[in-house]
Length: 205
Image (cartoon, rainbow, N blue to C red; front, top):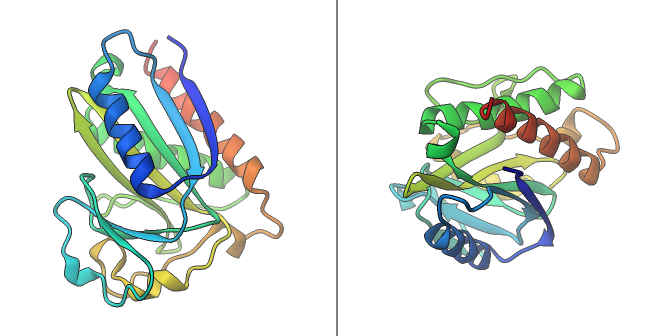
């Protein structure tokens, strides 16, 4: 079954969350999986079991408590967000398998740019020289997942200084533009799409 990719420029966080939840609640065994690629206006999001104390100084940036896993993170323009609306049961993927798949897709993309990246067993996400470049957060309902990953491409990183990213004090945050000049957002999006589709489709064989 073909995976549908949808591309949006910028979408309000609450609206995208509602759309993901609605899609997941109404899908059935023959519903095609979808990948949504988008950006958000500035917003802090707090995971289901997140500690509000990790938001140090939100200022004028809204804070939204969500139903995904993980702690607090920041979304803003210049960050590539990918929402993975996948039937994990159909793909025979466990939650840990799905996290690994997302991490490996980002690691493969960064390798295309000559950037060595890795994951950490105790802290989901992707790191370059111990600085976090991509965050993950998932919710599984009826054997299907939603939410997904956020890759920092070329954005204002200052808002990360006003939180304990992913619950960690003094966690360094980085982005693709710190390593390469003139990062093209659309090319990054296309590259990540291809790596995601390759890894997901490999599960169908």
